[in-house]
Length: 73
Image 1 (cartoon, rainbow, N blue to C red):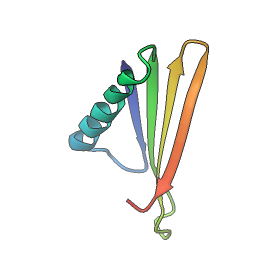
Image 2: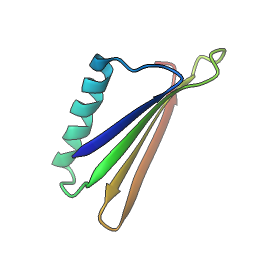
Image 3: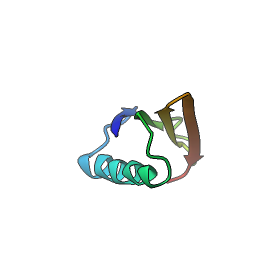
């Protein structure tokens, strides 16, 4: 599966990118028709503890799946 990762307001290191790829590859176990995906990693408002946001958008036949999570780490 083709995955594009964008990190916003910081530079993602290779270790983080490899971790993301391993986790996304596991999605094929549940749905093998995923065409492509985009992962967005954002660092917002440094004053707030829960300032890390991750989003994933998966392109599948007939639609798009999207998930978003915000937390401290």
